[in-house]
Image (cartoon, rainbow, N blue to C red; front, side):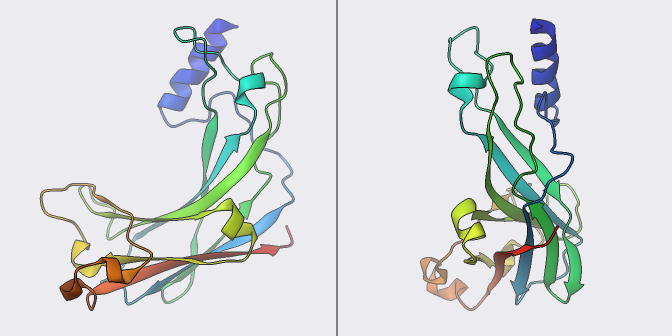
Amino acid sequence: MSQEFDSAAANVAQGGRGLAKLNPAPRKAYELVLRLANPPGDFAVVEGVAQYDVTNEDQCGYIEPETGTPARITSQEPVTLRKVADNEYRGTVYLDRMLDEDYYGRGVCTWSFSGAGAMLKATGADGETRFLSFLGADPFMGGRTETRHYPRGDYPRVDDMPDYGASGQQDPNRFRAELRDALFSATLSAHEVSP
């Protein structure tokens, strides 16, 4: 069984989900909405992601042999964001996407939805800025929005900082005064829908 765990760990390291399994019949559907305001140009890459974390890894997870501690169990699952209007994208997120199961022979691992986010890139070329946004589980399920502001000058790339991950700011006043008139924003929201 140790060989199965090692193989799963290698799969996770390469971007896979390891032993974790997707729920074949998820039912708790939400629509994730991304709206851009004053974008600096086109975004050829608009990708969504939903994050899920096991809440009881102490009781069910893999124990690291070197430390005797349980490893964190998390999964980021892609969410297809489709363009529905100028500067607006939508995709479906399932809160129950992951399958609760006994993955390590220590008890059933319980998954919980942690939030959803988006990543934007001008063309998808190496070195371009990655504009990142994320909406945690509570605001996501509570119908609240999250707006992040970014300097327009970071598009399509930041010199001397290839693949810069721009997380932006919630408060545009945190930017220097001369940048405040040169910002764009990304707003995430979600609402429950029928599956």
